[in-house]
Length: 301
Length: 305
Image (tube, rainbow over all chains, first blue to last red; front, side, top):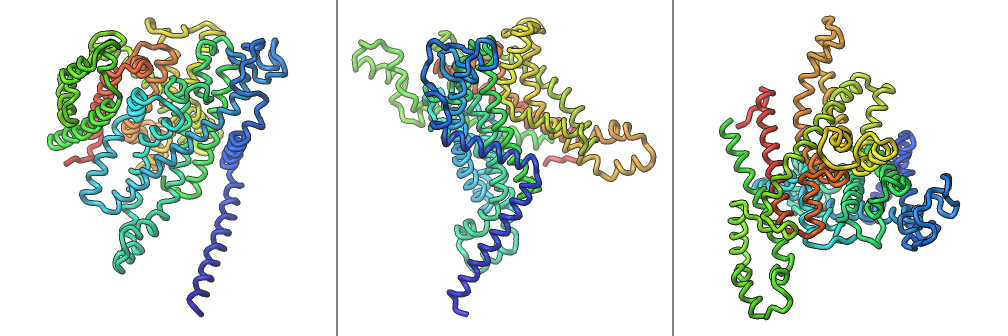
């Protein structure tokens, strides 16, 4: 058989095995009720975020001055025009919730991408090269771990004014240590395995070993931590926006909605209740999906 | 033991170095304090003299050295909001924060240890499902929102508790529940898995098979060994306690360090932000060190060299 044909066959094998992997994956997902529920919640949230412009009944920043603080439709004084009521500026709560989904998911996912990239790099390098590299890098990780990340975030946000991108970078830069620590642990045991030793013996360069042997093998752990981190990041963003340190008006976020109407929350229940439910349900969905992924991909974590 | 403590104390140095460095670099880029201190009509020459007098023309490393010297004597500069030294402002807020965090921790322990043990012993039953489900829900719910809902229901609709502030014991109830349940959510899960580990050990089976009543096995054999990881867990909760306190104090206008910090960040009051961050960081480091030492005392299997 020619080399090209052998290559081709190998490729075919690879793709057919990944298809069967995928079908096993789907079967396992169908078996887990919470995993399935998590996936459905996340798909709905993604759909809402993408098509917010089409789904929202009103412009989320447009004030309807004659409808200020209208209660939800089913309550006395409510109108079917504003199903979940309006806020203190007469803006439609439902439309704002729908647009808020965007910010939550964007910040949640992109901060995790930033944190994950830094943490993966740090963890792999530290674990693989060991010795003084590891010593120095782990000292830095320990220092970051011993200080709650919210403190760093607050110092940074005192100096730089908060915006969507600032928030993504700041959260990413302060939450990567968790990845670094866990990935390093995985790499420490992986690098003693035969396939890595064999690569080293035949003189493969370090970077190729890292890219071909180590990173693919830490991926399942990485995916699990990333998924669960999206959940904590969404809560972090909401908390910062609630404190007035996150997303700034006119941009809309769920935490920001709670901050905008802070003085009205206690007297107009619909203003505070719905954004909180949106956060809780979304985060719950992500935790369900993450826990299920952990059970399937990595029982050790 | 002595060696271990020295080692741990030495490890604090790089941590403090990183914090001071991050804070300093940020301030260095924060902009020109002279512009804020002088009136608009000040001449270019005045500005230059002021910069020279403040040492702002010195090289980066000299300025960093001066900064370290200042903070080691407790001089964080003056608050622009209160026009007084920043450090005393921070120190006077400590009792309120300790009070809230302490009671919340107690609430968390009282909830999570019994529930964690109970659900581990009733593994895979409806009880277990409810307890683990509750702890996941507690994790998914932002604690500031829980606080808002508690105010809405128990302070506005049914007026049992005050909306905000500090003073009597009644003021403490809602903030302590808000912060306590958010800590308990994670803790319950960890107590449960620690208890499950212990229940799988040989000596538990031995005790059961020689006829010790089940309740006694759990309480006097398993519980003590479950406690060891629980102490580490409590330390791991420290960052939840800190970030939770900052948020809870803001929701209930509790006059602690967290509220001061949030207000200072919003007002760009750099001196207070720095002082608060340093004090919280040092507290976190000290608590970590103490729990590590307690750990050695209660678990003789651990030896530190």
